Image (cartoon, rainbow, N blue to C red; front, side, top):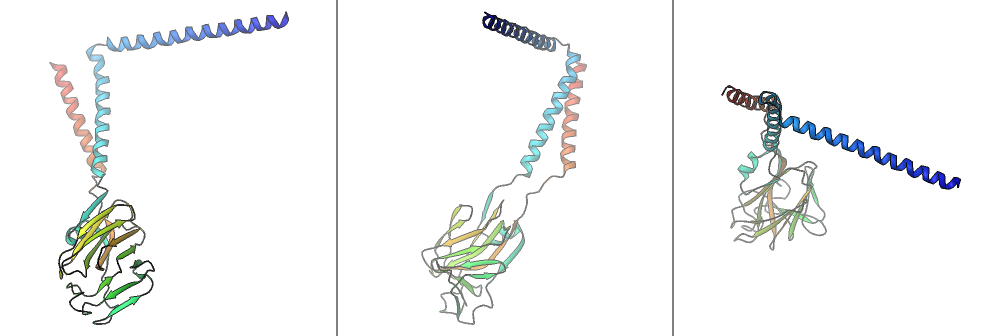
Length: 263
């Protein structure tokens, strides 16, 4: 009997708690509905401060949105013109491969060649060559002196932080050749080179560092004037400009509100 009384008492307490929760929920719901109804029945003059605050909040959000849009820039920009690439980049270093091969000769390397922190490889074993323009003339004559020569491809490993890369690209095919360019990011591009002695150009700026770049073609790939550095940042408005923008928009809203109130 005692056990039964305890169970009945526990059940009674549970019912009582549920009843209190129901009353509390009803009370809160009533208050919310009353507050919303009071808000809807406010006079025009009472609602104006609220509307002004809402307008200011909207203007602030708009300013932040505009600021974000102005500071953003495209992830990738590809260049086929060196002058345009140079104008869009900063802190550039150019490797021209001069002074490595003797006149009218070739300098062969059985392992990758590293110059100014940049490593070049032209075969699965890393072999690469630097060829003077007078070697087997006119095969390597592109009006730029010595050139780098791979064996089916040229792999380039870059110093840390490079976000701008450019190079003159050619091939031993006198009519020019199509190149495929693969970035460490996974992006792939196809570039056509003109007939000898003209040089093609491939340049790219990126919003994050590129660690390596791979050039491949069906002929013998040639490269000169390899350039790397950083991409120029898009112009960023000064904070004061954004403040002035927000202030100007606020003034317009306040003026409109005053005009409506006087009507």
